[in-house]
Length: 407
Image 1 (cartoon, rainbow, N blue to C red):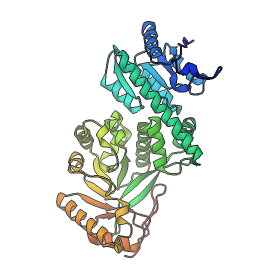
Image 2 (image 1 turned 135 degrees about the vertical axis):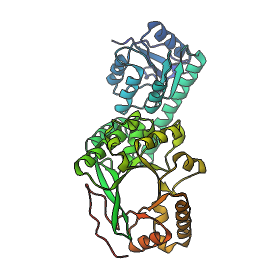
Image 3 (image 1 turned 90 degrees about the horizontal axis):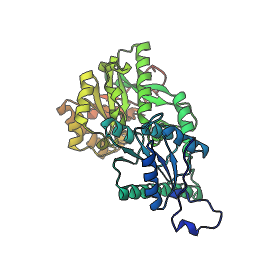
Image 4 (image 1 turned 90 degrees about the vertical axis):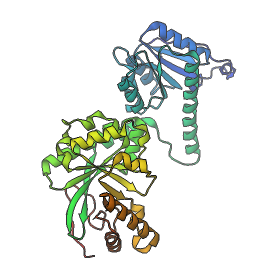
């Protein structure tokens, strides 16, 4: 069983009413297989005003947390290299259960893989041994402050009548969402030749608490499981291509954090077999700054045969560096630029200029969100090579037919 050392509280905490529970934010869980270091970290944090519980492995730490249904801790400080269950495994288990307690990871043998994994699963910081006493106290204090802020936000949401989401329920909803995940496909067409050129693969789920793909991805980000979703989506698309063998291209959205998944670059991955048919869409809203060596990663994807598209062009910032890094084959104009374009001269001028520039650079242009004939006609006249939207077909199981309207 785990060792449980409740060190004396900070003097301020001793002023609480008799019998009152120790404040959540002053509790720290220390996870370290070396007894001397467990005691040392405990003593350090005790001197900073924390009540400390000690565990010798990730498995023991989970026992502590599960006994308290997630554990009322303000911070967890965990070694990375431990027997039974290491620190990365513990962090992964926490996020899979929907527990969002701040985690500080400690290691004596830093490795790039561990650092990447730590960030992927939402570790607050990554410290190297020997740990500086002041730094550990300061980080733990900051972590507990963030935990208090999170709880206050939930209280405020409840008071104001908004729905405060329980992290544990997020994990349950997420699991059900993955179990019922399926891929819908929407045609991308050349309206002049009345030809279906490609289909976009769109994520769908039958989980009622996840009404749209953006909600699923937001939950995955919060739980540190975005790459798990990306890998599942790519696997499902590859399965569809194997079963149906379409002769068209497939557009597939790629979250910026998917670029950190080494499985994406494997020639043995199911989707890599169809790389010459796949156009990976990277949304303009995605934060690529957190992904290192973008140019190298993009080069590896191209070597496999994938092409790249910038999605939602016009919805956010696209600097010259952004285009230089991605060197897209195709850009997709955001729906906000296409909506009612036949009635908005400013939009029409912007779209026309974008199409002209892209043509000069050899970049194809897709106009998204076409819902009426006038939008389709105007977008085509302004230079959009391809169009996509409900006007032609709604997303459906593979592969929906287009009933060609007259423009």
